[in-house]
Image 1 (cartoon, rainbow, N blue to C red):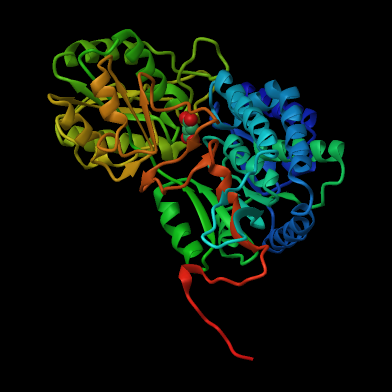
Image 2 (image 1 turned 135 degrees about the vertical axis):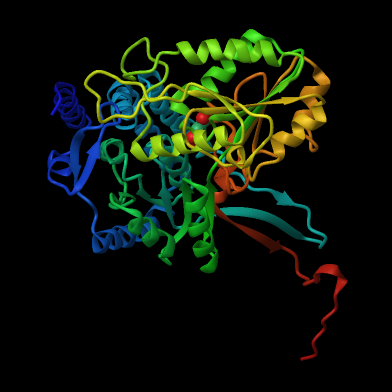
Length: 510
Ligand code: SIN
């Protein structure tokens, strides 16, 4: 084993101990965990068996029956306490995110900050779970909406945001009065174990939290299927590929369970003639190369006006050829490793397909990093392509940016929308008409439409999610909480008559 890997394994052990995870959970199991930083083994995590998972779902259901009756602001105290535990451990958990996913340290800590932020949001929300009162057409009647928790919420998360996506769902679900059962990616179980330990710390401090309220299932897709098919699970929020969503969505629909699907993206930015090109370049660089192109919101298509195309592409090429690729813990690095060999193979095959239709590729090659022969580092690829070919319309989860040219803004918006996915989009322009058009009903068809910032790096305050093959779900801020509750419409008669709606008469004789 390379020195680097021994060092990392030791560091992981120290971090997990600090974060409160029992040693046997990550040294004695059958799930082999590798770090993408070196490609080598750093832990052996115990898998949850099918029967144990079923027991966890049963326990979560029992916990829900207690939790739903605890006042929401008190439920908010638990989520606030979780936020405090996370705040105390930003560095440790952030570093673990980096080791497990290969994100830069600033992004690893940023992910934990996002968890803290959603906890703050949810704690405030716990005093704002408001419903409407509605004018009744009947005398001495009142109508109102009340919101109630659903039951057990299942969360299936992906490797690239191994903990933040859980928190977007769990923080809201818990203040809304639900129990949560989490199935993280098999590629990222360590950060999930640590998060679960921090949750348990918070619960012990707050007190009165029913056992089993938040459970963790570690293992393969079969555990996810258990959540999807269990009649005890009222809602499943699933983040992953469109292929996964196609399997999960119909199974949930079949039993009329709710779903929040956050699936593939194929995000584009339009660069207009008036754009501030320095700002644009920075926006593109972070969105396209950041997290090694492994965000759902990563920028994958750039649609540039013909008048600035050559200038933009020349500048981008300079950045692509010089950007620091390497160990994500080092300060000069902006692009860390791909998650694994499969991801590298998918990237190479997409680039081959692009070349075959006449595209010009800059970058894309494997980069050697000392002590990391089993890891997959790549130079991000800039691909000039004449048309939106099939390879451009597919999401390849890697740092590939396709660059297309446009003449009229209508053409650019049509290109932006002409893909099956609908997660994120942006326009770079100083022209108010173009910007407003882009965010209007006849503009971007995505769940996220930005002006003068890139496609990635959303804040928790907004609802997160997208349209078309992205799945239509919304998580995180705004009124996404409503999905974790059921709405009851109540009509209350405080009079002495029984008038029927729409003036219907139904007089009985006794
Ligand atoms: C993701 O969920 O993959 C990305 C979130 C973001 O970039 O804001």
